[in-house]
Amino acid sequence: MKSKFLKSLLLGTMALVTVACGSGEAAGEGTESGAAASGDQQTGYFLTKILGNQYWSVVEEGAKKAAEELDVNLVVTGLANEAEVEKQVQQLQDAVSSGADAIVIGPTDSTAMANPVTDAYNSGIPIVVVDTMINSENYSVDLMTDNVEAGRIAAEQMINRLKEQGVKEDEEAQVAVQIGNSGSQTIIDRMSGFNEFWDANAPEKWVVLNNDIKVNDGDISKAVGFAQDFLTAYPNLKGVFGPNNGSTVGFVTGIQESGRKDVVLVGFDFSTEMEQMIRKDEYPVVTIVQKQYEMGYEGVKQAIAIANGEEPAEKMVDTGTLVVDMENIDDEDIQSIINPAAAAQ
Image 1 (spheres, rainbow, N blue to C red):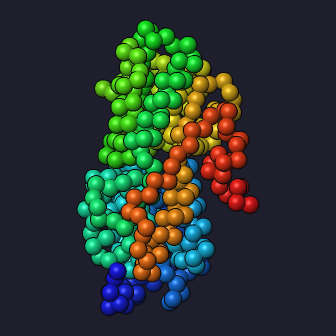
Image 2: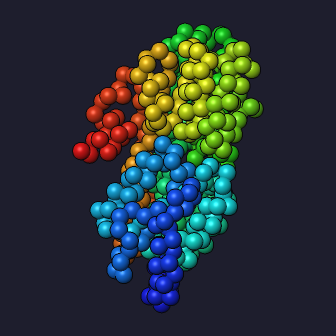
Image 3: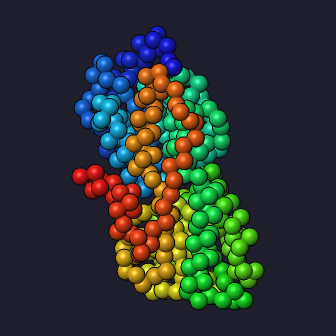
């Protein structure tokens, strides 16, 4: 924990930064949840990955709800895309220098953010990592999906759906993949789990195009373009896999624009585009949904609890996943995850 001397030393700086953050409107600038911090009010920072992204907006929603319940002044900063690693490093350093009581972060790059997170953690501030792990043990708690297992589930869904589509085991079939960021351990683990299950269970002539994985940097226009490229370049394309939200949305849009209703889509997370595609019931589509609201909500709760002297029950918390398709999209337990605000009313 920070010493009282350090806390006192940084108090003046914190006040200036809080005022500055409250007026930020551009992508990547800070915004506050609730009233301005008083002298006794704790200040937490939530460093989201991409501001405005549908997935990360739900994480942010959970973080803000926890801050409201705890009467914590929450400063939110974020990025325009996943390639802005240096910007996230600077945002993290700014949070530390401002005298944050606790920091919750969704790392944009698991390796590049390891040392900056370690430095922040060593300053005595509780660091809670959400969604994406970092390649270091120097953090307080990590709330995330078991991504290797989630990848296995995605591969199992792909194999089953291809069979349901009538793709024969002795028929050549290709599955295309695009990702948001090659440096994300989340993506690395999901692809590891996917390929592990695929190699053990898929017919020999069914091939994942691992030598032509596209990286879209979280840019939806790039993701749509890559989807269109795959559909044009591979005549035996039978399935596409998006291991993150942006890649999935890119495939959804590309497939719909092409008019192809024979390509199986297995994606991750929930978005307006994915919901519309599922509800049309014209496409073979399924998405693996994470509990990202819980990540944000519990992330802030645990960060503040640690700041107040509590020891976390466990360092790694698996928040779990759900498989969502046309058959279960309106189930109560599914709706509580994909639409948490409405479920809470």
